[in-house]
Every structure is written in structure tokens, then in C-alpha cells.
Length: 114
Length: 114
Image 1 (cartoon, chains in turn green, cyan):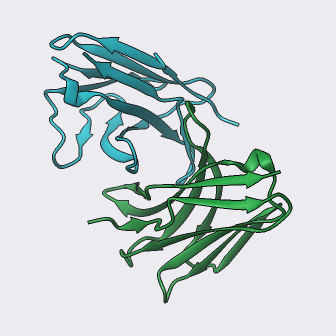
Image 2 (cartoon, rainbow over the protein chains, first blue to last red):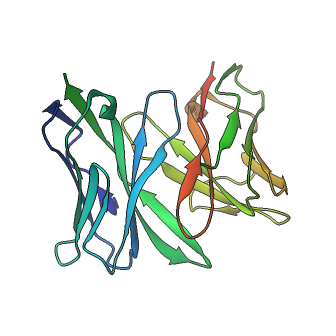
């Protein structure tokens, strides 16, 4: 059962335009959501997060939106840059026995075209 | 930011041998580390939670006798794949957290069993 779903395996965007990466989840107990960025042959790096009590969090060019009623979150990158080309993982966490158990989506490969 | 170092980054071993993967937190103490596994075109799957000074907590379906985890100090956790077989070939990655949920990942280890 895939609790965190990223239905778009890939996305291509022109440099300077907006990139929108989407993520859906099924577990209403998730209380924290995160986005990670991964380059080939490297581990994921934390990008931005949002608590379930908020609906928007912004950090520079990156904004995450959360729609709890729809169990949907999205990551907006604007303007997109070629260096943003990477795989983006959506993740959601829930307190599980004293620690936050994180579940990852399958990832979306973003290609920003110069 | 915090750094997690994982070694080796890739390893090829013969079927039936054991392989040890190290995960170190370089500039912080990590009482808890996490080990993930990623198959091609799939998401990161949590294998186990490594707790310093105590036994690891394994996810359902993960063989604890096959994937030995030792968290001997606050900066080092090791994963040993015992009697490796070709089906164990995968990308293994560790992470450690500071604070609530922000996780820092190692570079990952590409294991190929021939």
C-alpha cells in the first residue's frame, strides 16, 4: 500500500518558468511533510518542509502548499533553474513509537531545460 | 549543514560473502539512525531504525539475521549484509536526524552481488 504517491515520474520545464511537483497521501495521521532533492550517486538532501497545521511554507524560490482536505501537497519552484534538475522525493511522517517514521514517495525527475 | 558520511559508495561482492556498510555522523551525535533500501524505480523503503546502545528495530519483512545493524557509538552505525545473494543487490542509504524530522542522508552505497 503506497501511502505517499508521486504520480508523475518525470517533468520537463523551461528555465525561468515555474515547476510544480505534486504529491498525494492516504494516511490522515501524517503530521509533517518534507521534500528532498536527489542528484545521481548522492543521497537525498532536505529541501523544505511543512507542518500539517499550515497550508503554505516558503523558502526562497521554493514553496510548499498543503491541502489537507484533499490529502495533497505540491512543491513550486520559481523561477526554475537548470541546477534544479534532479529527482524530488515527497515524504510524510507520523509519530511512531517515539520517533517520526518517514514514508517516501517514488520520486519525480525534474528536468529544467536551458 | 550537518553531514552524514556513508562508506563505501559502491561495492561488488561474490554471492555468499558478507558486506559491511558504515554510516557516520560527522559533526553531530545521532542517537538514532535509519537504514533505507531503494530498488530501481521504487521509493526509499525503511529497513530498520538503529538505536545507539540497543537493538535495532526492523520493519516488517526485513530479516534481522540477514541485515545486521550495530550502533556502537553516537556517531557510527553499521549495516552488514550477511551471506549476500544477487537479490540483495540494491542501493542502501542511511540517515540521521537532528531535531524533529529533518533528516540528513549519507551518499548511499550501491551493492552489487555477483
